[in-house]
Structure formats: C-alpha cells, structure tokens
Length: 440
Image (cartoon, rainbow, N blue to C red; front, side, top):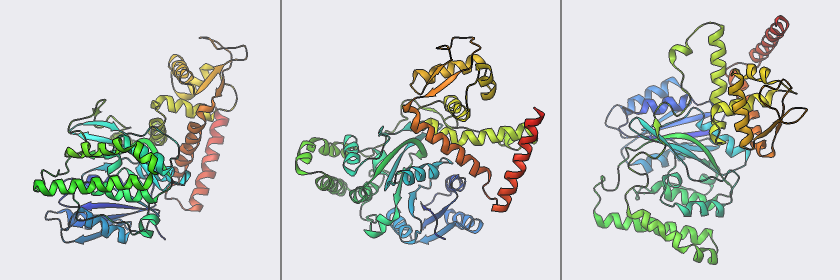
C-alpha cells in the first residue's frame, strides 16, 4: 500500500543532529508516511545511524550514494518516492509533532497543490516565529505569485522544507533539482512547481524548526565571477517566471517589484543573521511535558495525559487563529456545551476560577468570536442567570477546526487498535462513563 506522504531528508555528515531530526518525524501524529533518508556519501557516522533507523522502522528507506550534493540526493529521493504528497526536511532541523498532519489537512480539505506554512527560526537557545502570508483562503497562482513578489528573497518562499507538494505534478512534468546550481536551487524548483500548480494555501502555524547552519556562497569559496553568473541566472529564471504567470500589462506594472529580487540577491542569504523580534526561549514556544509527569501512574495522571493530548491538537488551532491556548480551550468547551449554562457551572467545567473564566469570555467577545447574554439582557458580574452563548459568523472556520480537533483526538486515542479492539474500547468506556454519571 502506497504511503500518503513521502518525507525526504538529505543527509551529509549530520551525525550530531540526525537523531533529533528523524525522531521528530517518527513522532508525527500522522502515521501514514514513508521516510527516505538519503546519505550523500557522509564521512562520519551518519550513514550507519540512518541504517540503524531503517532496521527499526519499516517506514524508513535508506539510500547511500557517493557525495554528489544535496540536489542529487533529493533527485534520487524523488525517483524513489511513492507517496501522494512530498515533504522535505533538512537533517540539521526538526519539525513539530503535528507538522505533516497540518500540511496534509490544508491540502486535502482545500484540494490544494501547494501548502506553505510558517516556521520557527532557531538561534542558539532562542526561537522566533516567521511567516509572510496572512491570507487564509485558497489562492490562485497569480495571487500566490503576487504575495511572493512583495518579499522575493525570503526563505519562506524559497525553501522546500515549509511546504507540501503534490507528487503527481512533480512526476508528470519531470521536475528535478538542478545540481549545477548551488545557490537558490530550492527556489528554482519552487518557481517551476508554482508555474504548474493551480491552487495554493498558506497556514499561519509554525511547523518547522530552522537552524541557521547552512553554508553561504561565500563559505563555499566560489570565485566572484561564478557567484555573479549564478545569481544572474537565478534572477533571469525568476524574471521569466513572472513573464509566464502574468499577462503583459500586469508584468509591466510589476516590473520594479520583480527587479527587487536583484537587490535581495545582492546579499548572501535571505534569513537575517540574528534572531527575529518577538523571540522566546527554545522550549517555551510550544506545549512541553516532562517525561516524569508522562510516566506517572493513577487516575490523576491519566486525566492529565488525556488533557495534554487534547491540547497538543488544540495548540495548532490556537496558533492558526491567533488565540492563546486558554482562549482556544474555552472556545472548544463552549462548542461542546448544549444549551445554557451558569457562570459557576462553566467555570467548573473548564477548570478555571469564575473571574478568570469571565475575563476570557470578555476577551473572546471583544475579538468578535461570540456574544454573551442572559434571558434578561447582557450579563453582569455575579449574575445568577444562565448564560446564552452565540457564536458569530467570524467563528465558523474556527468551529470547524475545533470539530476537527475532537475527531483527531478520538482517532489518536484509538491509534494502533484493531477494529475489534476499538469497538471493545468504546463499549467499555461508555459503560464506565455511564457508571460515573450515575454515581455523580
């Protein structure tokens, strides 16, 4: 059976980072993937580490080649890939547990050929969130190209690793990396793919940890003349891309913006060398759970683990809709409530104090997600009357995502169970819950 996604990782002398990279892939909430580890003639222990992973997990396929460069390694992987979609990861980086699932959901729900996502920029022990497109709906090729034109030299557009590709397009048109280009080779592949794709979508959720360790053109010791020729060749390709995508009038109107790429290309590297504004300490940017807590035994730990698993899925929705995790959690709880509920009951249900719960409700109302009222009008502090929560039309996309969260959570709880085991689990769990309801 063919996997849904082929995840491609080129590996060259990465024995210090490959375990972190591969482990992050193996921890994906989406399990339907194959992992292609492409050892590009490593002279350290990377090849052996790849082989050891391949022996432990049947989803991992390892390939070894003489050192020929990252483009050649990726081309070999493209020839071997079997998935419906393609995802790329660099061996010194890593991905969030929901990275593949997030990209897949956006692609399949919107029938998109390319999904592009935000990423984390990692410098030492600091991490910052990087994105570019705020548009949440499906974009045409022209609309996506217009976004790219505004910031042409940004890694967000140029690299492979924050995107999901439809393999059928790659294979039907024989798209491959150009081994002769060692600067912006990813970008040139992307330009050709974008020219052939039809539907695009951006996900405002960081799913990738990018560590700035790659070599620049300067560090590769290219002669100045070769560097100039290479940059001019990339620009000409970029310029021709817009001549193809835009009609003549639109191209002429956008010529100055298109030529901005020459200015951006004059520098060597498109990610700022320092950390971006708004950085936080690495490890605090997403939900973290200690191993000791996860290993705890007893009903309190069982309840804690279930809650944290649910929050793992909920966190992605919170990031996507610019909500805090407590705000997203409250929206989820409100989505589950049928009928009216008092402030005391709601606070008890969401495990918050009444004042904290009320403050969150007011924030959600001020942001336009919902309105809160009682039968006699707006609810004041201390009102004993039941609350009536009405979601706004603005909340519709969020509510759909929250419904998806509950579905993914239930599927995760049953992951690895046979159909008979899942049915038995559901029956036993329903019996337990019925007994608890009777006792309460």
